Image 1 (cartoon, rainbow, N blue to C red):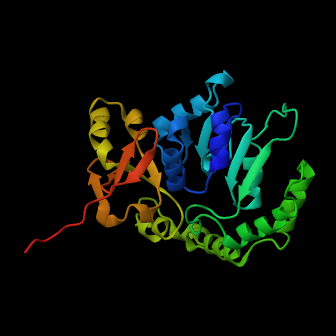
Image 2: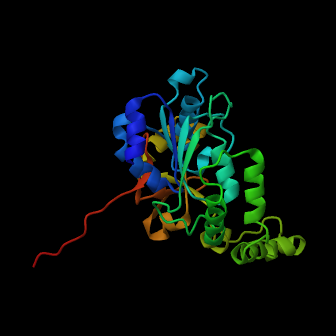
Image 3: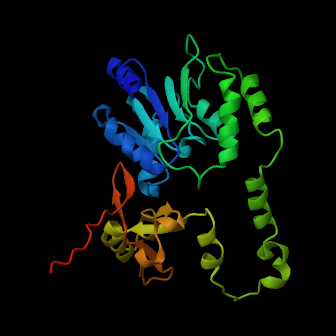
Length: 284
């Protein structure tokens, strides 16, 4: 943290911090609040996500944020270029994408610094295969302090995945590949047939669902009543099912039965957060 703070105080370099989950991103925003960080992660609704991406890819580079704190959302489809990066460890293929967000234009007089951290601030068990993450760290340690070429990272990727799938990856692949909805597609699907596929598939997987944060219900319903249906849908956030269990869900009785997450609130610039509720006390 001290090194990052010193660099930001100097004011000569742009800084990119990439962590592995949304909560870590939000916590770091508090730590570096003095430096006006911009956040980019999957916890923003679509409307604000669009505005954030416009800001960090502004044609005028001087108007781009000097400090960007992001998650995996920064890995694809964004033309950004930072001077120095601080990155949590992840699978090698994800890291290669992250490395490409530093000195992207190749105009630096010398190679840019990338600081890689072995341990993540938050829990990554639900996000990445731990065996691959550990193997990535082992392989990259051999390149510590070196000027990395494209061939270096290609070779590192080949070494990490030399045995192909890990046991966990193979198991997850087979679950999907052999699911009866795929293997028996022609006989199991009928026009007009309905089944609770959310219960069967999504809630037992890492797939996210669209929900509306509780404090945005009023704005959502106003947009719908004004006939601005697309604008209303842009208020949804995507969450993992375990972040919004059924007992903390309400539903707006519209055609799609919009799920309202009563345990989530939305804060502009920060994204969705869990509502911290005070414990109930019984005074006798």
